Length: 485
Image (cartoon, rainbow, N blue to C red; front, top):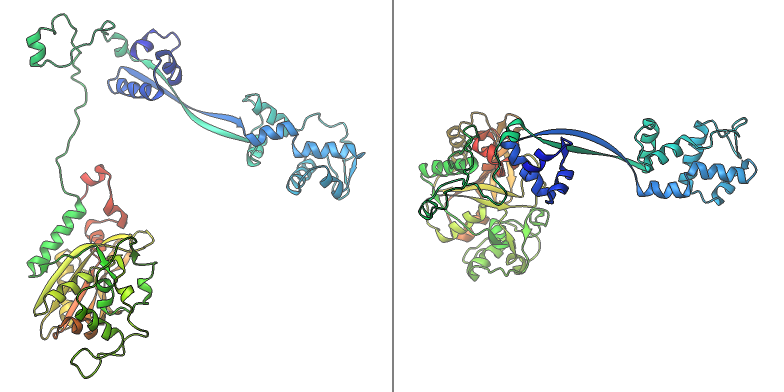
């Protein structure tokens, strides 16, 4: 490449011409030129050109004639007067006819009103309309033309303007002086034991060593800022005495919703929220647990109890829906599984893991999100304990502004929501929770009150890390990640 540039007499040379002279593919030429440029052996002269081209529609119009020309021809054929019906019969569709009439009237070639008539004194007008002149100029590759008429033809889809970058290259002064090895002689870039022992280095040129070449700046490996923050949040909860638990990402409707006393026709269980999974068979737990959950859904007493816990939900409990597999939409399913396995209090458990919902992506919503589920259960536990946990967690991660207000969830009563202030997005909900209803804990064999929460840790991380968009937590830009908190 450098030899081709040094021997050229028409410097600077365009990339395409350089590729032709060297017999190399364009991609190879561009890569070689960039490497030479990084070594300051070539210089670049870049210019931006606007090329005017006729479109396929414009070529067809050039053959058939512009609508205004065909309208004038029809007018002359009819003796200078043309009715709307005769104009339609001349082969002009309504859109072309309307455009032609407007243009001809602006050119002073057509009288107002109908029938259409040539304006008096315009019979000896120009042989070619300005639009015809410019269209022919573009077709012939001419550049000196009327810009306003070209823009009007572009709006009609007859011509277009293409912009391209033209790169021309030339050797730098250093590139001209650099000694090049003879053809077929490969210079030695590094000595190694095999080369020294064989003696092949003798008589061969050595590649010059450029002491000015930039040294790559390499940073050490570091964790993803968001993942590091999640690990710190986990350590915070472990330090408060909570046990960490996990559950499957692929759940059944039973654990994801039914055991939480969500009615089987609840809107949140529709395709607009939970993501169903095809081609997988779901499996229900023990028949005894399923029958107890079915009893509270249908408003029947639990086995051995005289009265029902509540009225339940309308309609019979459907085992087919209960066994349906879905991607877990909330880590509350982990709490339900945990309570089913550990029915003896006290309970201090949390789970920080991924969930999936059919969400519209925006600054505070994502189809995949982390949620920190937790439960606290023991005699005498109340909603005050839950509010205290929220305040302690917010304080521990440096959040001072927290608002608590009443809310509603199908599986807790009473329920609350905690809001924190984001510098740009304002107040965002991050601390939802409440006291599990008897319909949730009693079928699992739990007799003590249990408070539960499902913290939106991604939104908390946005506040803690100074991020304005939840999608930035999934950032794969290494430069931004290296500079992250």
